[in-house]
Image (cartoon, rainbow, N blue to C red; front, top):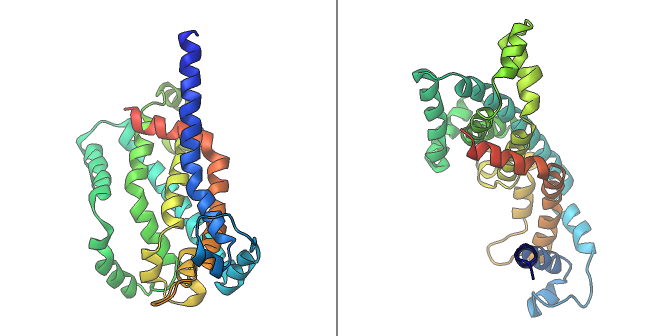
Length: 275
């Protein structure tokens, strides 16, 4: 057997094994979600004797997931829009100019990755309370934008260093200013890294429990994670409802990744390796 065929065969086997490993938790998740509480207590990993598809509709109604979905979509969409705009505009001068000031700004942004959020919880609560933003989506959106900017600037800066400057110089000769050049020429070329920023940050924002738990206290403002958390109790957890709600809650993330997966891979490679 030629070496190239052997390598392809080995690669195929490894990928199949890896796919099975990745799919196993998803299979267990769906398997538990469609079981009755009694059957779940008997055996959580066995194939259901009776497929309880009604668990999904019951979880949807009991946890008021429609309202929670709307809140999560609103917060996630506006947070992503804010972080993409702020990070892209901040990374552009950092990547294109080599001065002590821009280097200082880059280090300033990157240092945000090393600061754990628990250190800022109490000061942020006092700040939002002073600004009357406790229990508002606006306050949570500002927090998410601030938390996700450092890594986003890192990705954008690395990717921008791989875009030829000649494109911008040609635009300047044609009469385009820096702002117009960035919006019409540079930013459209940043689709791969923008997809990476959207996917990585949407995972962080959509799945986050701590920030909504601290700063969104009213029931009508709670997100999907808080809605799922409502199925837990001190002495009893409704695991069938929890897993059903988790399956419903992960669908938007799965669809987002499937839609942007090619751009995501390009952006991660370009943003992390170049420069």
